[in-house]
Length: 317
Image (cartoon, rainbow, N blue to C red):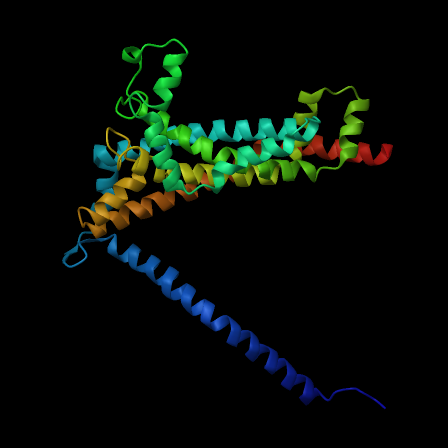
């Protein structure tokens, strides 16, 4: 007996599928629009007004944006992101270094080392802030360790008050928290590289450093670019270290994100805070595009080397 369905039957089934998809998607889409896109559009609108949560003093055009780039406190807060960007470079370098060693060398107990390195990422950022707040307090953990090594307490700086070192102290907390996470991601990416490439490189007489440049770095470029983008954007919007460890941005540690928080929730200047948030978003987009261009054009030669090695390895094996 023929089981061919009529065109009307097929059309009815297709409409049933469409109705089912819409039924399941309409609620999440509604919530996404209501709590994400509508507030975003309202933030853009508010950024052109001089307003608080209860009063609107009228349209001011680009004055809020101009104030972001002309007032020294906002410019200085943006420049503080450079500290965290430098920390992000150090963080990624350490993570890639440890990941390469653990992937290429057979080290006893490397699973325990991975767990120890990854553990800080599992700890809540506020908890880490309080841990390091007491770690840096005068006469506490860090000072005690340095005194045990022969340093005099009087010669040591106030790690959270001295403006020549306090921002570097805060950056270290971010490096400590996220280094293990990046290391685990790099290890997973390195594990996906074909082992035959290492064999071919060894036959050619390549050492570990040459294997790293020609095989590992091009092979994990996508993951490395993702980690770099997340690290740089996280540097621009750093909040927890300066807010918790730095006592809400005291002693010159207030990042741009903290300034936005203070402007919105302390000074009640919602319009100015929205303009600052839009500037922050623009900076993040600019740095993201620059990084993508860097990897597309500057890292192009490394991609060609990696592909040549891969083709040679396939020929040998």
